Image 1 (cartoon, helix red, strand yellow):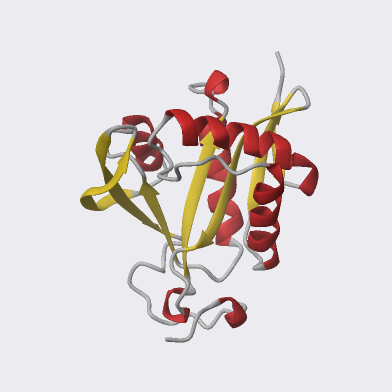
Image 2 (cartoon, helix red, strand yellow):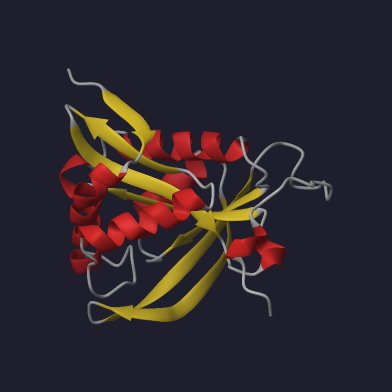
Length: 188
């Protein structure tokens, strides 16, 4: 039996990340992106997230990348600097085998090491019950639903908003002075 390993993504993973994401862009409503970016663009996106000090992970089995996950700032304005949004994509041939769980567990653990206090999941298709259940298993709760905010594959798409605290004290506490690179925010 092969063992799954979750590790930080590298630039060398870009082609496999692009392959996995391409499937979701072309065939699902998990992403509301309409054209699949290539490996070069996915490498650029990964490098930007890593430059910000955010985690970007891959799951690997038998030397093959079978899924990836990352955290990015929930919104670009500085007031949101302690809130991250997670993204998880799994190779469609490897679903329901624990890859998403392993990636989300590792991503949450990585975010617990940083200054972030809340994690948001924006599930790009309100009918994506598997993603909702996955997030619920890790303590996310639905906090809202945006109705018909996207249109893809000939259908209007709802987005489900889910949230979890990062650390037991963060839901009620208002004091955290962790440092975050403020140069990545717009000033409005």
